[in-house]
Length: 448
Image (cartoon, rainbow, N blue to C red; front, side, top):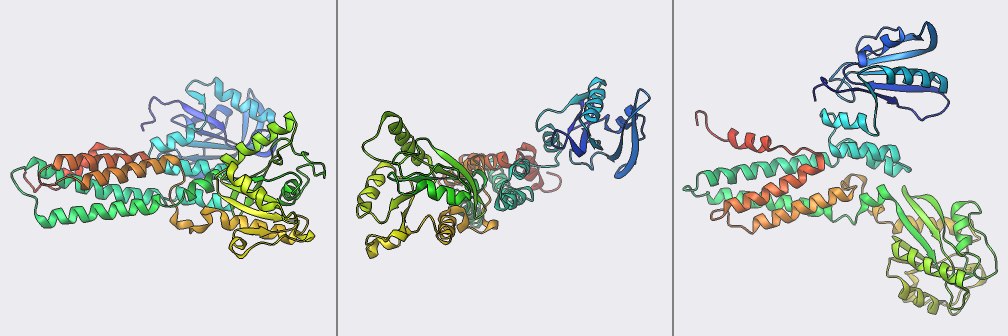
């Protein structure tokens, strides 16, 4: 992207409010002239300098200045940073002066990153990784975001796309020279390469949505009859009194939620109203919301009173209310448990909500139950639904391509290969017809 004709953008790159240090970032053709607006000299590219910033012959601040020359900057443009004291007055004066200067404009949300992408500093998957890094709550999310930034998705996608471009180029050549048959060995090699590509895509698509769950987090709903200890378990997981606990049936009438880091996966735990047949209008609405919440949960913790011989019937009733994956918890183990047969023992966990060791065991069990933890960090490359849809489209296009006769209908096969390549190109934002043309023309002999 040429810098000519583009506004120079600026914004505070640190959180708003009073602080020890605040950074104003400026990017664009006039970035190098920014210090002069405050009576200071711009430092040489790649170097820092300390200068007093003056306006109307009054000192505003003493700041550290940094200048980076295009294209060797994060945005690919000239970039200047002013590391100032984080005073509201300082920020108001500096930003006000920049706003009044012709050619400068306050940056819109994400505009610095957009310029990085437009200037080839990042691809779309890297941009998404950066956004995920900023929003990361857990170490697992942090590692996944950095993997995206470092090319965990980009590298294989570009390799796959390169192979597709090569296959399509050979088929395009066959179309141009329709009177010549494609050698059997060449067709076999093309089909083998296509099957290998399709298999690679299938392996990554078959990840149970692990990357999306790490990025988006999971919802775990506590559901069960009244007075089985759901709120006690919620409070124990939270390490604080998040929900009111009482022996009175129907105490919890609305959904209470807490946010936890479970094995590196952010989890929202929902405490719901106890389920029973006889209830008032308000409690009945709470029960309806409980069932609704369970329907959206990634995992339902069915909390039952293990000391009550009727717990199997209560469990069966809840099984009929929701089909989401479940983990059955027999609470109140300290009061003695009704018999659990051998067939059920592997599907049921008994605990006492008042025992910290049991709560630790429950957290470990929840971590084991979360799908993403069954995958090595390096094996998951899909972190957004957009990625999955594009890979699925490419996979299906390759399947259609294999169904064509390369000799009789090479143009049909070539079209499906193009569709697959375009789908992959949307992941990184690198969709360029010149890439295909370059591959085709490079296959011609000299003088052709």
